[in-house]
Length: 88
Ligand SMILES: [Zn+2]
Image (spheres, rainbow, N blue to C red):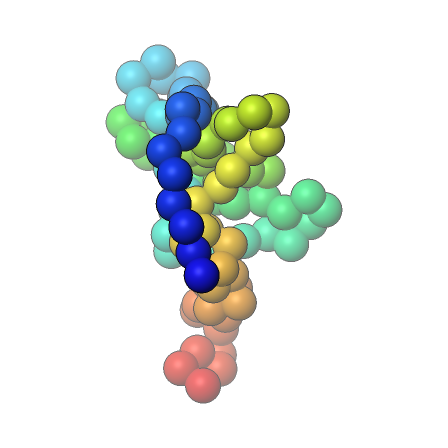
């Protein structure tokens, strides 16, 4: 069974060159299956697009980096979005 406990962690944002926004994963974009994988991000301010090897924002705790489950659990579906066999 799952058990929860409260921890102290650090939220890590990736800031944009524009100095106004931070990069967030583009939910409509495909994951690029390089090694390491890359996620397409969009700046929250200027909409600049970049590829990053972590899906930001991430959480750091005791020297480990944690990513949001929604960015990794269903990557197959994300990968197929826009493909000819979408919906199968
Ligand atoms: Zn920006």
